[in-house]
Image (cartoon, rainbow, N blue to C red):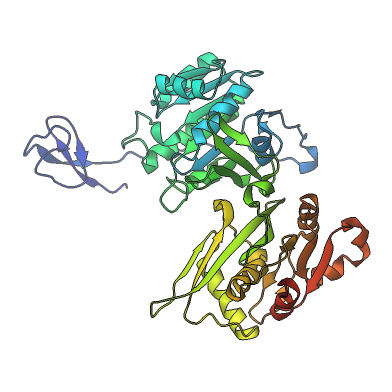
Length: 455
């Protein structure tokens, strides 16, 4: 027997609540909530359809139909193009360029496919103004729509191959309670759009908001539901942008795309290493080039350090582009195993260009940069350093050393300081890197001895 549930219902408008309230929130009338008893009806469960069980070898493998967006860096991150019937979620900070990138991609796709751009946050006039600024021709369908039913009905009339929804937090389903962007609305809207994509074989782009912590707004289930999750990263005070994939059911997540935000929109950066290396006519103390891996792409970036006496009891430790805890670890290793003290000294670390380094292969360059600034001795301008610094002072090997070496050789560097274990792996392949002096070091003290210029 089903248990009876007590409800309170407004006698004027029929609003239901699970507790008594003096004033109805729907019609704003007082003392209209009356107690009623609700007996839930048992739902008859229909018998499930018979499940067909087959061997995996009997399943026919179908090739993936991909649409090229016309933006090589975008296609690179997507795994070689946009898969038909897939749902791609693109997130990023406000003003980072999400709408600009998708508007450019929609214009390129519209040259060959039927594209529908649904704007839930901007009016058609605003979309038109952005298109004119980007010199985009009006060759795709667009509409300012926030109701999910109207969006799906319009898509059924247009029958697009690609649908862009900007943004998923601005679309609502009228049958559900809650404002647009609430957890229930976002979950249901995304589920309906995924169903539309799979049933009608439409490739769907969803623009997603992010929280102040940088994660996708809404339920975490949202990222599990879609096929591909991309983040557009960058500093609003710098013009470069990095498109990073964190989930991709049709490709690798070890790829990034690098763009520059210009007046004409998002411009691809073919050789991003040039973007992060400053042009110096002479060597500068505290500046060291390192080879960092972003996915499968090597990037040469410059780490700069400034060590100066402090006038305060507690010295400052400031870092931009590298985790401050990692900087503290390297400082401790230098004091313990290299005999270099930073007591009573302010320490400032910066990665040029606003790029952020996550991998530990930048430890060696960071240590050399700090030591160079403290001693006032510069590294040779043709030197690149990469290696992980251990707590015992050893230089631990890094992955994909060949890709790092090829990038340094391509940009004209002459010396590469690396872990001794990585150098031992390359003994039989020395001719491959002719013109690049490979220097292997086993500990931090040895690395400092071979790297800094002597008077």
